[in-house]
Length: 170
Image (cartoon, rainbow, N blue to C red; front, side):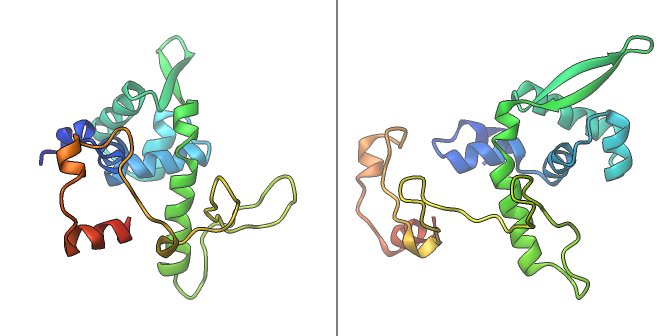
């Protein structure tokens, strides 16, 4: 499957990966959540080429994740601000950070701590059920076809050990 075809897949994960799934886009989004807004700021923080950065920023604007707002007229320069659609990526970004904090830190520990402004405490992001509020783990989740699933014959196909494993892993 080609990279651009991911956005057309009947799978929410594939569609999302088609938009934010490359390393530079994720790092640009990290910088956005760290309040970087200007092209030079992204370039300085990431060491990315101008061409590649411009391409990724255009895609994020086209997808409605960032807004491009002028802040200077001569020469014309823009800031990139997260839209609500972009802000909705925060749980994904925090899940990646949390995994890295658990599995990828060295002996020095976490490079950044996250503090909740309301209570003033450093926190670890947790995923909870939207219905009962209980913490979730992969072993406690079952998947089943939703209204956006592939047509009935594919969704109703016989369950194999491979599809059972895939369902358990999701």
